[in-house]
Structures are given as C-alpha cells and as structure tokens.
Image (tube, rainbow, N blue to C red):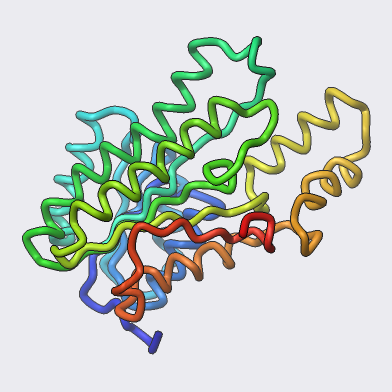
Length: 258
C-alpha cells in the first residue's frame, strides 16, 4: 500500500490503549486514517492518540459489552470525525481454568467481551459503511478460534464465535462494498501473554524463561508473534488491494495453524 492510502477514512479501533490495539492504531494512522480509539482506560487511550501520526484523532470511553455505552461512544465518534469506514474489533480478554472449574461467571465474561462486544460494535458501525458502499471490518480473533487449547474452553468458544460471526456477516454484505475478516494471532507479546506466563510461574514454580519457551514452542518458528506483525495484516485487509478478501481467518502464528 502506498503512503496515506487510507486518507479520509475514519477508523475506530477497540481495545486500543495498549498492545495489539495500540499498534494497529499507529499503523492505520501512518496510512492516513483518522482514528477513534475506544476502550475503558481513557488516560491510556489519550496517550496513544497523542503519539499518532496526523491530526484529528480522538478517543471514546466504553465497555464494549455495554450496548448503551457502545451506542453513545460511536455516536460521539461519528459526530466528531464523521461516518465510520473501518472498524477493528480488537478488545478482548483471556482467562484460563480447567473446564470443571470454569464458573458461569467466567464463561459469561469471556463471551461478553470477546464475542458480544464484537457484535455490538459491528452493529454500531455497519450502517455507515452500507450507506457509503465501502467498509472494512476486521475482527481480532485468535488461533484459539481456529483450534482448541486446554484450559481455555470459554475463551476458545468465544473466539470460535467471532470467526462464525465474521463468515456469516461477510456473506450478508458481500455485494455491498464491505469486507469482513478475522485476524488470528498466535501467542503474541502482549499483557495477556505476560499474565499467562506469570500464572504458569506462580502455579508451577518454573522460571519465566521456561514458561515463555513453552508458549513459543507451539509456533513452528519457535518465537512469540510481535504486535506490529498483527497490525500489518490488519493494514493490508483495510486497503483497496484486499477488496476481494472477505470471510477469511488470517492466521498470524508462524505456521501453527495452516
């Protein structure tokens, strides 16, 4: 994609305060998009917004699982920066537990933020795209949405749901100029991974290096994915060159999922 290829496009990224979401925001801003960063940590969102290339970027505070908060945040973003052209559903959370110790509350938390949040934000953004006859929706799923992992049944179920939503909506809007895709990172250098490593260390007494090596061992490249690699996949899917790519689950995992 050439420089500023997303000029004039209003992109909203959820969960943009840190990690993959912040990196996606930086990447799309470098392509010329005007960003709205959405999340619950307003101070962190404002710091990321201040670091972006270009001008006119803003923030909106909302819990993506709260329907009313989502509608209000999207209305504010639309009023300040115009109709939504790009939506990146990145907000998510991961908790682990053996299946028989997975409480109904944990199950619901994983569905709410990872799946219901994607549904609510997509419903809020899609009308703008349909009216314009152009739009890009990119859902950050996970390799857990493409395969199973032990001890994360609730998280994996939610991410499988995200991929099902992606495929169904892609078919529904295929003739309307809107593409809908999922990007599925493997273990990535984020707060979620660091928390998982700390959990292993705390429960097993193993070293941090050994715990991290266990996570990286599932990647055939034997390394942890970097947020910038995930962001670059999103960048491509948002561009004109990916107009014929829709309903896909793009695995960014070093070959873990093929």
